[in-house]
Image (cartoon, rainbow, N blue to C red):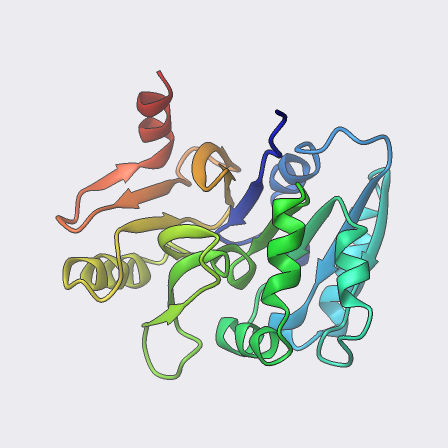
Length: 232
């Protein structure tokens, strides 16, 4: 019996909305082999910021893609039809708590789950990188970094922008103190591909940019090394 391969791509920061890291954009696109990929953008976390929407079309028009976006802050009707018609969903950055709260209020988690289970690739940067996890360390809840419950498509925790020392330090502190489970910290300019909920490969835009697995003993393992070991 053929089973659907379920993919999520989490990007710590950068990409087309920052006009950086072309290699990361291409890493996402190359996960699909379709002749004409339907690539859908969700700018919910930025409250459907018009500039990010413009950048989406401007930066990705160079590729042979069928581009579209959906402004969930304005409407949710027909969203289920739109998302199920895509090959790749890309969730932009911004306020993670705002985004997840809006999705929950409108009962959209099931739409994402249906898309994921059908083989549609879920991807995103910053807020769009971490929303798929069981737990998130976020600065979108007020002062400082705090735990936030995610959508739980991937078990464990995640934080983006791990190249910021204070953020990865807070991530380690929260894991050590069991406020969140062990998890993955992702630098800016880094994408992690998860297949069926497990890290499969890492794409980095520079030698010094990495993703890390951090356990409750504060062991910081470079994820690419960890993947190589577990896949041998």
